[in-house]
Length: 242
Image 1 (cartoon, one colour):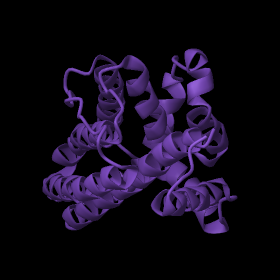
Image 2: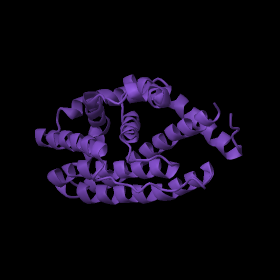
Image 3: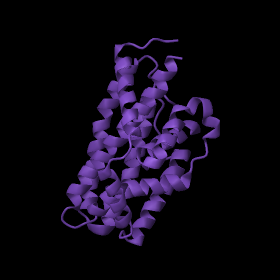
C-alpha cells in the first residue's frame, strides 16, 4: 500500500467531489433543456446529420487504429504525479484556444462551413485526450488505452441515464477491461450528437455563429479535460492505495 502525499490527497478529494456532482439528479432546467434539444434536433438539416454521424464514426475508427492521433510515448517515469498534472494543465489552454479559434472561423462561415466544425472539433478533442493520457504515463499506442479514452469521451458527452454505468466502467477498468473492449457504438454516437446538437444548432445561425462557435468549443474542451483528469486521478491514485 502506498500513502498519498498532500497534493495527491487534495486532487483525489476534488475527484470525489466531481464524481458526486456527476451523479446528481439533473435539475428541472436541465430536463427542460433536454426536451428542447430533442425538438431542435429534428430541425437540423439531414446533410448536417450525415456529416456528424460520419465524423463520429471516422473518429472512433481512427482512434482504434491511431494513425491520425499518434502521440509519442513520453518518459514521465521520473516525474511526480503533481509534476505530470502541471504539464497537463499547461497544455490544456492551448487546446481550448485552438478549439475556440476553429469554432469562431467555422461559425462565421454559414451552414456548410459550420457543419465542417464537427470533424475538426472531434480531432482536437481526441488529440487532447491522447496528450493527457500520455502525460499521465499511459501508452497510447496500446489498443486498450485507446478504447479507455473512448469511454472517457463517452462519459463526458453522455446522457444522465448512462452516466452511472460509464462511471462504473472507467472505475473498474483494470479488473474488467477484457469484458469492456467492445464499445457500444450506437449509444456512443447518438449520445454525443444529442449532447452537442443544440449548441451547434445556434452555431449555424448567421450573425451569431462565430461567437457561439468560439464559446461552445472552448467550453466543450474545458468539460472534456475536467472529466479526463478526474477519471485518470481515480485510476492512478485509487490503485496506488490498494
